[in-house]
Amino acid sequence: MKKIFALAIALCCQIGTALTAQEYYGYLYCHMAANSENTLYALGTKADRGEKFHPLLNNQPIFDAEEVARIEGGTRDAFICRGKKGDYLMCATDMCNRKSRIWNNYGIDLLHSNDLIHWTSVTFDFRKGSEIFSDPESPNVLADFSKINRVWAPQIIWDKDYKDGKGGWFVYYSMLSTNEGDRYDKIYYSYANDDFTTLTKPQLFYDKGIAVIDCHIDWNDYDNLYHVFYKKEGAPGVDRGVWSATFEKLPQSNWNDKFHITNEGKEQVEGPSAFKLIGENAWKVAYIRYSGGNAYKICNADANEANVDKGVVIQGDVLPQHGSFMQVTKDEYDLLEAWSALTLKQQATTDAKEKSRLEKILKKQYKKNAVKKLLKLYSKELRD
Image (cartoon, rainbow, N blue to C red; front, side, top):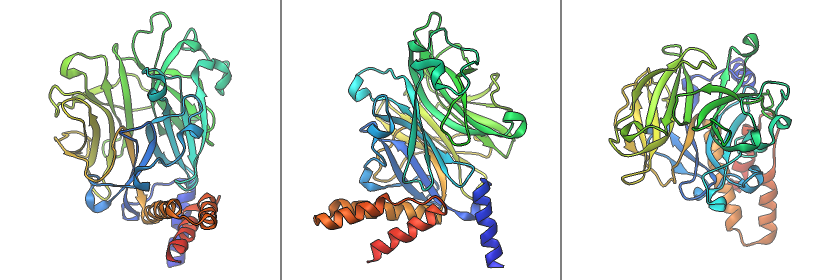
């Protein structure tokens, strides 16, 4: 019976079926660093209910942003999720304000991993126009792609209705250009292929009539609706904050605005993210407050992702900024802990031969059962 159960779980992972609450152990917080344009990891257990996290790698980047982001060498606004083949997907804003000293950028990065540790990336410089997209003959939503000056905060969600129910990866982001009449950020979308290496041309998703950025969308099984949190960047006063809306189908443009998160009063907030609590019919809503004293807030919400409370400042020695949260299994949690410990061990080693040996081990990759195999490999090294 145990073998049958194990086989069933493995099969579920392979075909992308969601795991049950009992199989999740904690949360992975994948985020931009508060002090640099790099991507960091932090872990929290189920018992801490998404409010307390500890950093991995002592808050060092999880990959070299210069290698991942081929336009500007910076990865901002990291979003992570599970793929459909037991793999993992990530996307990020390709931008480095530290170098450019302007709040413009020109594209995004799509990343793929089999183990949450080793990532490959594809960079899309939207200024290049039709040649970078998988459907070059599709209509252009912009008169001149070379005039794009913002492609911000991409995120991913599975669209189960795409291609007559076959499904597809829906990638959405805010975009702005200097084309005539393009006065504010709107939300656009593309579809990625199964390998997460191509994008269709941008199409308009949502036009609020004012600048809108930092969209986060999730599907809620409780009310069978898509829920979206976003920032009204172009609104005046306290309205310039995080709002919520619902809609029934992707890419539906008539969003039903629900409420405005006013917990911070006149202070400014952005970068919303939401995640369901493990084993609970409740959600957390997170955002960054960037005026009146910076703070990353984790708030309670009900089954409908509504009635958001004032929340708490995230706990732990993390460097929080705009990011995302993913539920992880015990094996995934333990692997990331072991990877962090082995990496720090390798960095601290003064023996050149040992440093080289450990570096080779840390570069090891597997195509199948990657999490379990790496966990076994790293655990052995830490025991020896």
